Length: 154
Image (cartoon, rainbow, N blue to C red):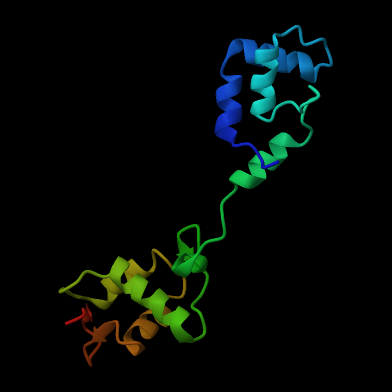
C-alpha cells in the first residue's frame, strides 16, 4: 500500500466524529462506530483493514512529505547561499550564468563595491565569485577595476 497523503489524513481528522472514533482506536477502546465511519479511517490510512491503529503512519507521511533532492543549480544553495563553486565543467558554467542573471542588472555599469554588495547576498567568498564571473565571460570588468557590466546575449 502507498503512504496516504497528509492532506487526506488531515481532511479525515477534520471531522469531530472521525477524530472521536480514531481517538477510541488509539486508546484501545471499542470504536462504537458505523461501518462507514470506520471505513473512512481505513481509507485515510489511519486504521488497518482489521481496525487496528496504523503504526508508524505519521512518520511515513512526514518522511514522504519532506523536501526532495534539489535539482540543477539549486543543488549548490543552502539557505539561499552557495557553499562554493563547482570546480569546473557545465555545472560551474550553469551556476555562474544563473548568479549573473539573478544578481546583476542588465545593461548597467556598476561599481566594484556595488558588485561586492550584490555577491555578498549569496556567498562569503566575494573575490572568488567575482573573478569567476569575469573569467567565464558573464561579467566584463574595466581594466582599471572601476566598473563592471553584466554581459548579455546579443
